Amino acid sequence: GDSVTQMEGPVTLSEEAFLTINCTYTATGYPSLFWYVQYPGEGLQLLLKATKADDKGSNKGFEATYRKETTSFHLEKGSVQVSDSAVYFCALSGGSQGNLIFGKGTKLSVKP
Amino acid sequence: KAGVTQTPRYLIKTRGQQVTLSCSPISGHRSVSWYQQTPGQGLQFLFEYFSETQRNKGNFPGRFSGRQFSNSRSEMNVSTLELGDSALYLCASTPGPGDYEAFFGQGTRLTVV
Image 1 (cartoon, helix red, strand yellow):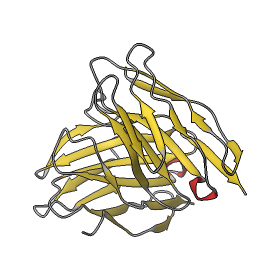
Image 2: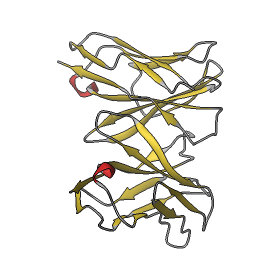
Image 3: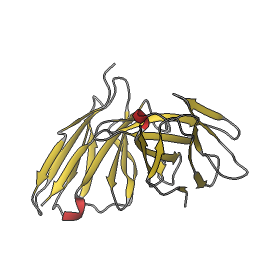
Image 4: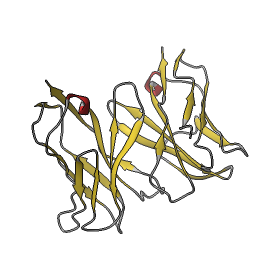
């Protein structure tokens, strides 16, 4: 079945460091891909999305490109801030039940 | 525009009891999905409702059920609670089925003791 694999955390970075969180997927068909972010004590917020191969999603300085050839959707940000500390989830659409399928999440801590 | 509202935010229940959680979607959204989030299993799909009908269901036992009302508000019920049901239950709303850009509520934290 469809699945998402993302890098294990936690990831600890200093402020202004470069961030990459790896995400790869397995899917039949052509799913849409998403990154969601969860701040402590909160639900999930959509960070960015891409609906077809080679699309680049971007928001708040974060970017991810839908790579069909490598089945990847890695999240990047050039300069992280303390306020970016959160758990990041990669997800794809269109599971067998027509639902979102999530990776396990990667916890990011940014130190001043 | 109000977001997705889940009530209550926190619940403590005893094994064997039942519980009902509520979700009010964004105004105009007619599809509601429920997810269970645990440290071990991550985010798992429970079910999706649209126009008061369950469209899809995840791989959970029959103790987990839900419904949707004509105003699109949804409830989920868990009967005969087990310790392993302790989790954050998240509700997500979308305008309609097949819309995957989901908007999530803050969740209900259920603790079973």
